[in-house]
Length: 227
Image 1 (tube, rainbow, N blue to C red):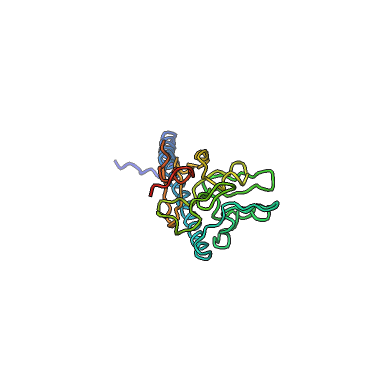
Image 2: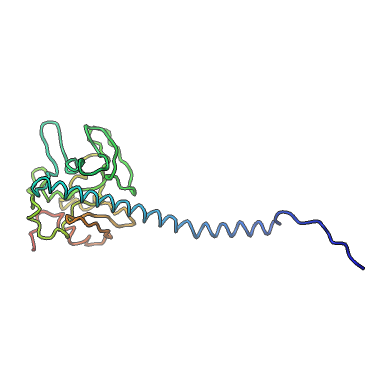
């Protein structure tokens, strides 16, 4: 006896099948989210490093135009103050952090892993990289080098580094040379910091108890030269 073929087809999912699909999607999300977060963090660190390379290039272009003499890391006169990065704006095609007491396009001066801290006064700024003031002094401190030719090891002499804006006050992240300022370096890239050197290269260093001897050395002006 020939049985008739049923033309009825089951549509949709059963509850169990739907729960299985939801579980699989949840597992995939749990696997992918950390990887995506890590990729995002790596991308931000790469952007930061590229920006510091532009800062280092701008610094070297400035040196070429000024007989290899470093700019003052902070100038004062009357009611105005000029800090190290402002000498580099014309070379850095990345906007400015502060100009005419107005917050403008931060360009290469803003680390993508950090936040803007806007101060409540005219000195508010958005620069998130600190310069090595020992290169040409800050305030009453004596500079160590002043000229590029006085630096024995440009590849080990820090130019600038990830630093804090400290609630917008410009005077707290324009220099990183006092022995008490080590804590103001920002290890914001998964407990590491990007730093640019005089020779133009950028490297990523992880925070350790000794905080990288070469960097600590160039941050403490009272320490003697050892080369």
